[in-house]
Image (cartoon, rainbow, N blue to C red; front, top):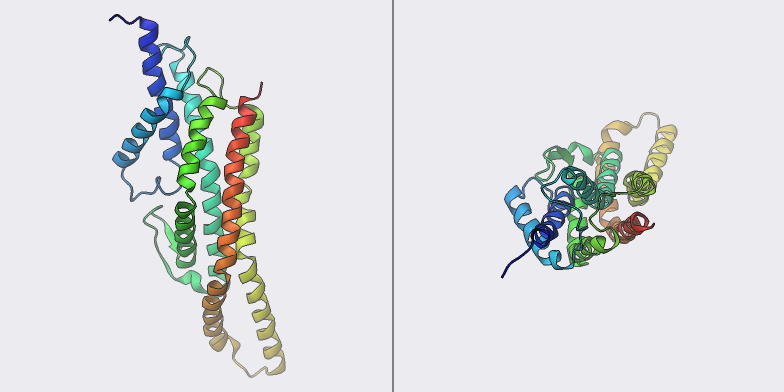
Length: 261
């Protein structure tokens, strides 16, 4: 049985291009991009997903994996994969922002440790929210939805010499604001409750100037911080699920806007 050079190039490209796009996405996507997950594991996962998706990939026959246009196509695939991973990364970053805000207001921000995922000092509240978000992501089969969206991206954004459109890039930059707005929305109940507590401290200090609010208020604020975090966890989970759904819709819209003529 003889195979032409064009057929061999198409077979190589049908595996190579998905591998590059999926590898770029896994390098920045939540959970799998953490430092405690080795590069070998991410590489093996990218290869398995590329093998599973490659039968549905239709690449341009004019693209030669060993030609001069290869670097342009590789760059486009890396940008597309990073864009899809960044959208979910911003959603998870909103939990970290919310944890920082609550930690500063409650005094729980003094409890910091080295995050094994990022390798930087992180408040304990932010790490707690990140763990809860990761469990919700897995329990809602978010990883499966992400894989399906990656597979769909090869239908909407086929492998070619054309990458993301300008509108898609601006759409991604605007979506980065969810990292701050989502964090404020998640931390809003705790911020409102602690604002009332600080107002109460101000009234007490005004009514009884001899009362040393600094020696007592710090312990009360920390204790109330634990209570506020405990009672606000259902609201935090609900808001994170809403942000996660919006993130998946954003990935879908990014693919549609990129695939539009």
